[in-house]
Length: 94
Image (spheres, one colour):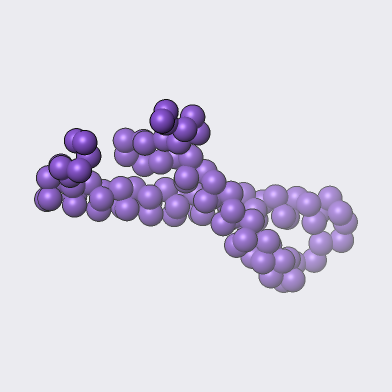
C-alpha cells in the first residue's frame, strides 16, 4: 500500500506540529490572558480595545511559539539520544 500523501517523517523538529500547536495554545492561553490583562487597563474605544488585544496577543503568540519550539527540539534530541544508545531498530529493516 502506498504511503499517505499527508504523512511526513521529518528529520529534526517537526515544524508543522510546532505551528499547529502554537496556533491552538495561543488561542487557548491568549484569550484568557488578554481578558485578564484588559481588566487592569482603561480602553475607551473599540480601536483601543483591538489595538490592546493585538499587542498582548502578539506577545502571547511569540512566547508560546518559542516555548513550543524549544519543547519540540528537546523531545527530538531525547528521541535521537535513545536511537544512538540502542542502535537501529531491526524491525525497521523489514
